[in-house]
Length: 441
Image (tube, rainbow, N blue to C red; front, side, top):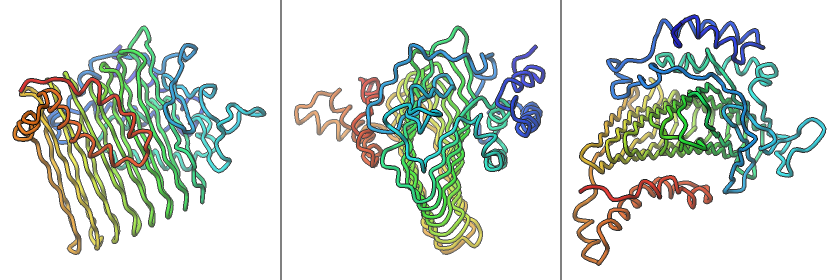
């Protein structure tokens, strides 16, 4: 029996969250059939031209492994409300919770205006909203078979609701930890975030592995921002170098809402991030910032799309990438301005550094504009460390390796310095230690 065949996928689907949820079970069975009909993406498809998923397709995985968190001791480096997820399982005893029935779990208590539920509970209490969010993900990522696979094998996740007029005083920190198992594991979680009218919040997601574990992580995330809501979303991806990490994010913005995102990619053997931000009502704005640093044989792919659906919207994209050794990085960014969406201000910049002769970077910025009263721009560069700058630094007595590191740091910190969260600006060692090494010139 093939691991990715119909019989096994239907069997695995019966072990998923849909096993105890009638409405989800029907959606999952349909998703299995549609995934089988669609198949894994092929590189002859334009959207997957530079990215192969053979490392997933050719393997079998342990689906949603048993919980093993008795030896896990998470480290928290900044003050926040902490939520810990180990091997796809939410672990309340390691997390800061609102309440655990009659007793307080931690002294770091979330306010009553913030509701966080394991997804298996939210499927029953918030079924209408989650069903709509799953439908939106399916509709807007219709060409991506991994979103179908996420729905078909939904294994966990969270419902996060920031209620109207809430000003969350500290960040919400979601720590995703993976531990070593006897067999390669796969996870298909979904996270649903609803920031209601006039609410403000910061969410920090951190993806880490305790060992060099081989795994397949396939994530779906849906964020809904109400009128005048504000959300800053940080994602730090530092998975094992044997991991495949796929992440699909859909953001819906309403009137005068603000969304900013900071994405740091330094882990995984294969990582692919797909982002779709829809500015659906007037005076919404978003700022998307990304940094990817690929080494050895890592492959990092960023697909970013911003849709201006109505007039009076703003968007800014700044993505920067570095590739060393035999690594491969991909960036495809698009700004879409719909008909009648006038008075749009949208800009996109992608800058890249190649640090070895064997590294590769492919970039494709796009504008698709169907309105005439707009200010839109896009641009992309691929280059190497500036030889003139290196010579200048060396002429001032700085050794070559240190000079190279200074130029790389200057390139990287244009993104890091934009981060409002000071604790993260001061602690990004995942980039500074292994990446700043001597390379051949």
